[in-house]
Length: 340
Image (cartoon, rainbow, N blue to C red; front, top):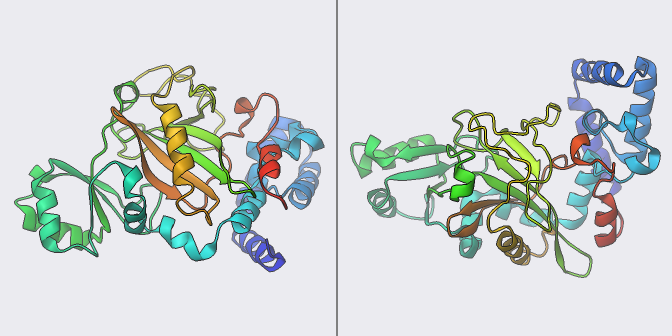
């Protein structure tokens, strides 16, 4: 990564940092670790310089309880940004940022019909309305489910009224609603439950799956963001550790889904090996984008890709109760990418 880019990102982060939040985090760390306020700030500064760890990294990964060798194995915020800048072509970010563009390029993997509102005419949207009982509408550039709506077509007077609503809201794509596999529907069926599967193409051009997380919606939400999450064993496809509430600063262990009561740890994710093969193949479609977080749904007939994220969250599978050996993913990443 170019030095200028690193400095610009670091300065931007520091400029947006809140002293109130920093002090709150330091207080939390001191209470849990027994360190002094000054000692904590000094160690945070050290970890920022040496490991690219922001104060949230220091807190959520409990760096205060790790050795220097263990700290060096964690994928921190600045390291994740460095990896992203090093291996992803910024001129191709738009493919993954724009829902309509992504759906068109990855049509073989998404497993659902859709209408690109900007490129298809009103008749196509009316026909789509007439052939579906419910649809899922997405904004063009927004992530984490922001602005998305799940609509029942019976709630509209007719197709023309539906088209007017889509135009008024500014939706970019209107899609067929995905159905959860029964094993996942029994956990939560108010949203499409997805896996975040992160692939990294090594310097030789071979894609690898470096982590996977299953996410479940909660409390009536129509998306699974900020729901219950937990890492999946990459060999067995099993929900491997207790989950967490979707906020990585919240270290409560979630052993059962808060709404259904279904036990999470030990849950076998259906079609996991098929999903693994699918994302490794999808990673080859735009090989200049080597570091991608795929959101994958598991349907009764197999896995489908919801979307790809060109900047994937780095904190999903590194929480203390999910890394009992205190080893993060950096050794694997360094094996695949020189300069990390």
